[in-house]
Length: 257
Image 1: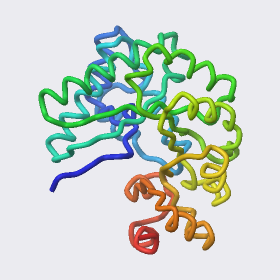
Image 2: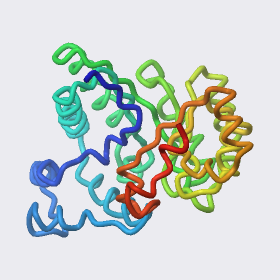
Image 3: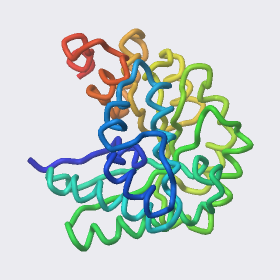
């Protein structure tokens, strides 16, 4: 079946085998003795637990080729699953925090997307996410760093730890992104309340909500989403893994359709 994948955080696609390969290539020692011990660490109780191991994996990404190899590995798997269109989330702030230039990140990701189009016929585009646990000033800095690479990025998103970091924290930087012509999306209503979804729509003026499962608790919001035909990229298996729901039988996807 042909598919589109609209909710993929590329750093989260790193498999333990590739993490060890990149660590070895870059002369790094991991906190895990082998691939299987790292694989066993992929047990989470909530979003923050996941983000902790997620950010550990990002430390092995040091060169443009590393970002290329990570993205190519994902796109090869996506192609094998008959994905024809992929929208890839990434952030630069994690990696500039590790001392890298934002261009290293963007150029490696983009080159892999271009090569995948030629090799697999898969259309892949990049959405840069601001990290919501950081400040709006830092988001503005991240935006300025990628403006010379503007043509390689189709959209701007908002991701990372949701609770305690409402969308309106980033109102001005999203307004600037809108002026620059970026497509706008935001993670909202995964663990955060329905109010965060309202803010993403009305303050950030996004055209899509990523996750959004908490909208079910606000009938007026559900009507707004339906009437405005706002798409939600709901991720049921992620919701189970991160304990937003205990199991699939409790997931509200069926009620949200």
